[in-house]
Amino acid sequence: MGHVLAAGVSGFLGTPLVTALREAGHDVTRLVRHPAQTADEITWDPATGHLPEDTLEGITAVVNLAGAGVGDKRWTPARRQELVTSRITSTTLLARALAATGHPEVPLINASAVGYYGDRGEEQISTADPPGESFLAGVCVAWEAATAPAKEAGHRVVHLRTGIVFDPGGGALEEMLLPLSLGIAGPIAGGKQWWSWITREDWVRAVVHLVTSEVSGPVHLSAPNPRRNASAMRALAHAKNRPGLLPIPLFAVKIVAGAFAEELAISQKITPDDLLADGFEFRWPDLDAAADHFFAR
Image 1 (cartoon, rainbow, N blue to C red):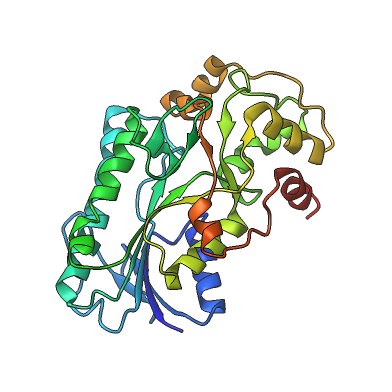
Image 2: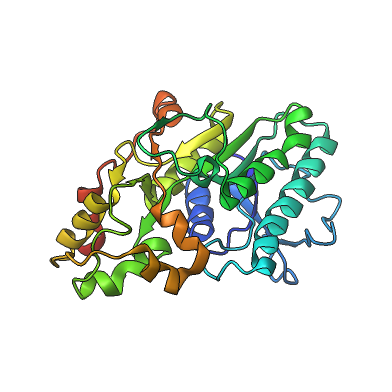
């Protein structure tokens, strides 16, 4: 197949993505911030602009997931700055390096999030809709804008506007496992808000698909069937054979998650129209079946 340069791929999403890319026949070289230890690693430092000159030689696609975790620490002023800076510096460095290669056929598949839209209530959201006004929306706007050097040089640029990613091995669902097991994970902040979700398996499969697709611009990485929060929590609790009846008020979530709790209360009704039109088939389009699969493992 091809040779993919991948950044920010040591975590919950990146690790299985590298495996899947290799299983699909791609060679993968990983950008790492520690001294390279294996032949498939190259050391870089976005903060200082360090990227070895020959890094992009022979590369047929770039996948960039680099950025500080959104939900793993409280949003102090310093953390907010890190959330922005870690995304902008890494994306800008790669976009400029791509633009300088003179090979516009090499695409940039760059992470983003549905947080771009902010709270949209009952509105059916499309990729053409404007951004919201929340902090996370501002992060996503700046993040996507940082790809401009590559886009202006003619590269196909994809913005992975990712919804809530579910898998028991990490992310949002891992945080819910204990309350689900105790039967106390009910609707959050009233439960009427729309959650646009995707399994980690389908997220990985979608990114592998997009590496060789012709799709460009923002793409929704979310399942075809968004669910209201109360319905989603019932599906997860049912699969876990627990009642899940105890409502969780927003203030309680804020005690644990701080300002990030606001993101769990916003409503975003999103469908993956571009992915579906491009022929991508979800393995887990329905949350009930996905939840049963998770807890049957």
